[in-house]
View 1 (tube, rainbow, N blue to C red):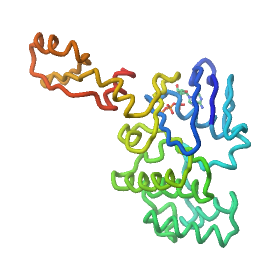
View 2: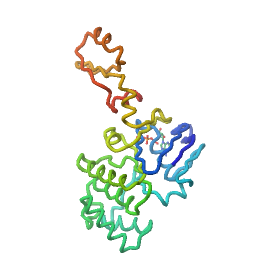
View 3: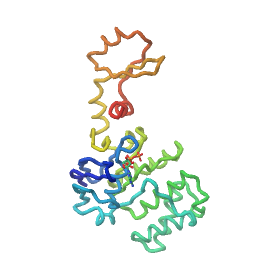
Length: 264
Ligand SMILES: Nc1ncnc2c1ncn2[C@@H]1O[C@H](COP(=O)(O)OP(=O)(O)OP(=O)(O)O)[C@@H](O)[C@H]1O
């Protein structure tokens, strides 16, 4: 999947500013960025709901609207249809995409049970987390080659989030290409092969380990009384600490701190 110089504005508000990226088949890529950084706008262009003002996106050689048949999507504000049971919901999506009713129902039951959801439960009686799971299962039932997940684990408790993660790891093992946006850096770090930091533009791209390496020359010095943080290069650390007239703690940068540094 390639994006080349993608621009997208809402009136005067520029959401994506010359975004380019390249995602290989089977890769797991996370887009990270602050609120309003343009992640959802980019995802909506990937799954063909919005057109770029400039530039283009190609997915398996095709335009997003055509490539949608290869994709499973969980939109950010997506909500399942409340009046159905979990099984009916997933079955319906399976039928819309490719399966007969019988096939879709069998697959729906299998996936729901795997994710710990009672197939007969009505969607409106499910917890927020389980509703998200129903959406994710509805996106994957058709066995898409590409998964686009816009903040798929928002609102999930840590256990439910782990279950979704485990499932996504399985999906990756099956060779699927997975693109997700998240605010949970731990999620990006745990799951993805590569991350893009996006704040309108792409600010940084790479493997989590490479990014960490790049920033490994920086130490985070925290004033333990005020909580203030300083980012200090390795070679300047001794001099900095020698002059510090406060109680401090020194640590290597985590992905979270790299994020803070880029977006502060
Ligand atoms: N439908 C819309 N109409 C007008 N402006 C919009 C619309 N959708 C998004 N925006 C604006 O575009 C910018 C990018 O928003 P977007 O939702 O793509 O960012 P995001 O990174 O997904 O944010 P968040 O992490 O908060 O979900 C923001 O300034 C937002 O206010």
